Image (tube, rainbow, N blue to C red; front, top):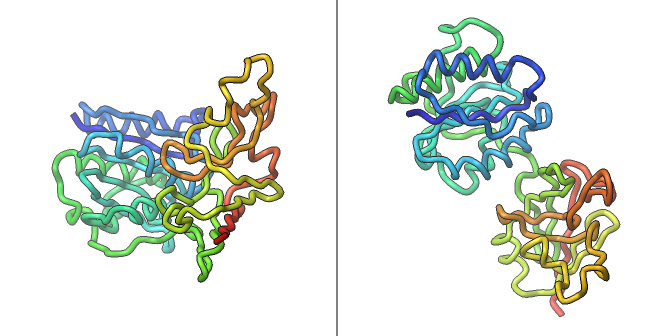
Length: 278
């Protein structure tokens, strides 16, 4: 049974997701179609990159991952298929896969060239489904495209470190449904720069001097429940994917608020970490 995942910015109001699933079932009758997300912000390549990077490895090898974000074909936005670590990816060459490729090397990447054999102006439905069906039947990538070596990068995907290793500048690359801010700073990279030095994290006007390993670590459970006042407290934490996150404990935009809203930070805003040698 072929596993095909879908990650798109289509939402669920219109017919797009249903049409793609129907086309997949026509091409691959026994397909197991799994929705990763259809709530990617419109055309947000970096948001899609973060989501697929942190989801695909939970699937069995051989899975085919279709990513329908900013996928309209044009001279600056071609279509690619990639095999990496036993998985297959079909999407536009717009930077989405560059986050995955910073940590693992692709086995093969091809620029899809079957567009003259399909009709329509809905590439996820018209092209990506055909490519996924070809892969599911054991077809080689070279049959549906020309091998390429490089793919487009995403700007600011890597944090900046000063020459003296005293300052690290990252950016917000994802805002989750709790309004928490995920940065592009991963724990191993942070620790390689920190080297046990004291540090300060600046998120606009908010300063943090400690990074928690779990959200609930901010709570002193020895304090009686009726004396605690932790909900809505700002904090820095390494999330389950090892990314540095600026969060609020048990945030809720309808009640205590969230980090993005209350701190006035949005996608691609900078987060600065200062290291001290004393």
